[in-house]
Image (tube, rainbow, N blue to C red):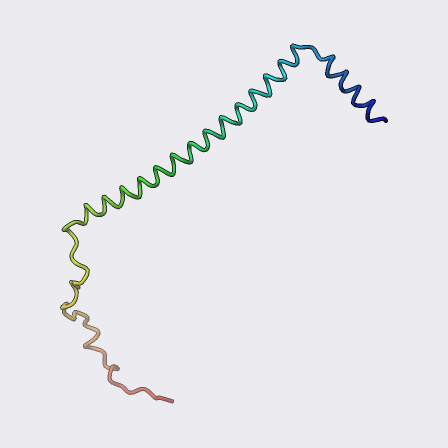
Amino acid sequence: MDTNNFYIKIKEYIISIPRKIWLLIIAVILLIALGIGGYLYWANLKKQEIKSVLENAGNTAEQITNSATQGVLPSLQTNPLQDNPDINPASNANPIKNIKTNPF
């Protein structure tokens, strides 16, 4: 089949299509393009909102932690269990505690 003849037949077929069908085809293509563009814009907008919400949540959590711990927590240098008494009864009652073990 000759390629020039093929292109001529396609051109004649395209020219023979009525104007209403051309307008319908163009309208459908535009609607699809607008739909895809709108979805991409909406998805990008959602991503930006999520990023801003996460950034604000991090800052808010830090502010809440700072305000809640202000003057409430003891300093990190203190150990409240430093002078606790030995209340384990098994540590004084173990009869095998002083037995030497075989080094070999």
